[in-house]
Length: 160
Image 1 (cartoon, one colour):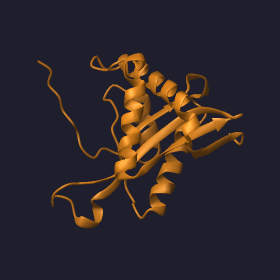
Image 2 (tube, rainbow, N blue to C red):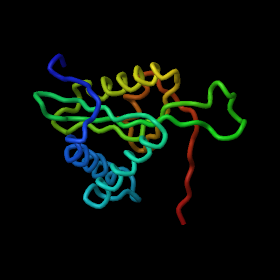
Image 3 (cartoon, rainbow, N blue to C red):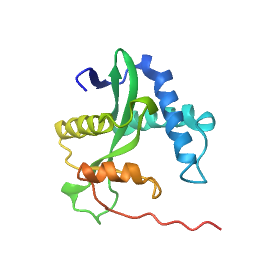
Image 4 (cartoon, helix red, strand yellow):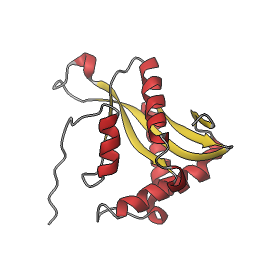
C-alpha cells in the first residue's frame, strides 16, 4: 500500500467522488430495497454531504493510487442535542459514506481512510467517531468491528 496516498479531497475530484458514490449506492440496492441507484442519487447525495460538511465541519478524504482517486470517506462533526449525553461527550464525528472502487477492495484502503479521519478528528479535539451501516452489510460491519467499532444505538424500522 506504499503507493497509495490518503489526502484531502479537492474540487477537481468531484466527478470521481460522484462515480464512487454511485458504486456505493448501486451496491446498497442489493442489500436494501429502499435504496436508490447511483444514477438516481449519487450527484445529489454528494452535494448534500458537501453542504453538511460546510455547515457542521468535517472533511472528505480520498485514497489515490497512481494519480487516480480510488476511494473516499466523508465525515462531519456533530453534536448530540439535549442533555441525555454528558456535555463533554456530545461532540463526535459521523462517517457519512465510505467507498472504495471495486478493483481496489480488499487492500486495506477502507482502514486507511478511517484511520485518517479518526486522526483528523482527534486534532480537532473530538475523540469519538460514529457511523451508520446497513444491517445486511455484513462485510462493512466486520471491517468496523476489526477497527474497534461496536454497537451504540439501533435504528429499527417497520415498513407497511
